[in-house]
Amino acid sequence: MTVIDLQKVSKRFLIHRKRQLATDRARRAKSTLEDFWALRDVSFQVEAGENVALVGGNGAGKSTLLGIVVGVITATSGEVRKVGRLGALLELGTGFHPDLSGQENIHLNASLLGFRRADVEREFDSIVDFAELSDFIEEPVRTYSSGMVARLAFSVAVHIDPDILIMDEVLSVGDKGFQEKCKKRIHDLAGQGKTLLFVSHQSAAVEALCPRTVWLEKGRVRLDGPTEEVVPLYEAAMTELSQIRDSAEVVQTRLAAGDDAD
Amino acid sequence: MSAAALSHDHLYILFNLVAKDFKVRYRNMSLGILWSLVNPIVMMVVLTFVFTVLFEQARKNFPLFLLLGLLPYNFFSLGWSTGTSSIIDNAPLIKRVPFWRELLPISVVLGNALHYVIQMVLFLGAVLWFTGFNLQWVWIPFLIVLQVVFVCGLSLISASLDVYYRDVRYVVESTNLILFWLCPIFYGMVDVDPSIRWVYELNPVSAVIYVMRRICLQALPPPVMTLAKIALVSFATLALGAYTFRRLKKNFADHL
Image (tube, rainbow over all chains, first blue to last red):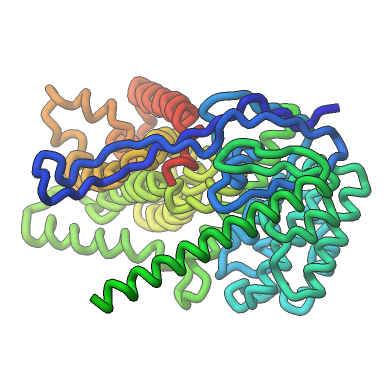
């Protein structure tokens, strides 16, 4: 069964651009709207129980795409269909209030993520245990370290028990030990037949968790297939890109140096 | 998901959001909830001074009369202005978490309503001391609910517009300032020229103040027509607010 179905999804952002041409008085300080297509005709389907990774460079449209699937962003055109309860983790700790205690924040955050009161009460202890915060749960979150906040947020999110779990670059939190714990938890969820769609820059995590990878480039699907085929190609392209950037930098430095010499 | 389950989930979010605002506001304050009484009492003292010492005042119980204007007006203006900025103030949530957006302005208005109710309870305690209880008090909760409906409706409109045009909050602030003078706060409905009184009756804030004073100070029931007008305008505003908000909320994330 297809649980996420994207048909020719496009997203246009309007960018306000201020023109500041001091020489041209008529156009001076006149702001214009410019189109920016974050996504262009993106189509793919995710089947129930499938684990899919989204990779791509900065500005490829990964976060926009996740936002559209989750429902916080509306697509400009195209169709988005979802089946089942959706758990979204687009940024850890969104909605946490520093002055509230860990306990109060669990309730607030969990309700916003779609928990019912009974779910939270049932899962409360295991949320706290997983986050390893039993001793601090009555303390205000502003006294927590950033690692503690991330642990609490992650713990709440993975206890929602969603059919579809959507995550944006959340595996890079906490210390090594906690990261391993997160990966294991996600692995367990995947094993339970949950559908997973996640963005990560860590190729190792992608390879470990997702048999399938979708590579986005400049808002379009560049490649969609088995991870062991897509990720090496993607990595190679990224290395090449950074080499080009490096050599461009060298040229620029030399030019600058040449300018100085004149 | 059935409609009942949906609304049950929403109530849980709403409860948590209101509790958050309430706790955050008073945590780390030694006077706590008493602060919500300071502003209306200071205003009352100042206005009483101006209108009994500097100008002549024929009304008896003028401080009570004033508070019956100030409390409903304060709820209206604070609820509306904080409701207006509620979406922008919670931009990270809007951009990351897909919950029902209407809950943000509604929770902010309900948070202010909670203070309003506390103030009214304490105020009625004072009235009990000065003039005694009367049966018409049963109307008061009903009037508060209508006011909440009205402020929710206005906030849904202004909060969604504020995302697209940040000037809206300044328009709201100025409107509040104007309404302070155009609502019968330090004067009564009888002081208003009969030819323009219909405008006052269509403004739920003025009408609620008028009805509250009849109930508390004269022990008279609310005129049916006035009550009907308050209800009509309030629910019409809520309907318009719900419609506007639903239309505009789709692209909130693009503008935050």
